[in-house]
Image (cartoon, rainbow, N blue to C red):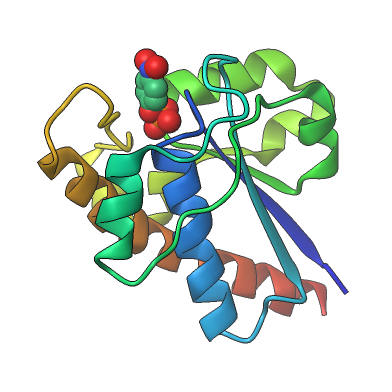
Length: 164
Ligand code: 4NP
């Protein structure tokens, strides 16, 4: 039974959030939790609706054995109701989500790097937008996302233990 629904959100839903979605899917599968944790991604903008993930993100992930998938979609009000955790890639994304979220749904909105203790210690909580930069930016996104997703999975496993 799906016990936890996680939505990753960036601006375009073609670089960072599909990367986080695929990295998290891998971690969740490796932990044997794929039937319990549902994962999706969306963008705050409508700019790339229907498009496949960015070819540069896809290539960088593939080099690490991770396949990006899906078509970009825009986050909706219903997402804020339907998902348990809505994980923004940067503070701008989080601000947009908090404008959509009402009442208790506001408590679902997190920054991905809040789950990386090193990032919390330095206060550098954004996953930087790689879209207009060089290829190094896509490697950096993967490094940052892999670390934070490990922390996110630990957080979810803690929640499951509390709820059991
Ligand atoms: P993402 O990256 O938010 O990580 O998917 C971007 C994709 C597209 C644009 C900006 C960021 N854009 O300006 O079109």
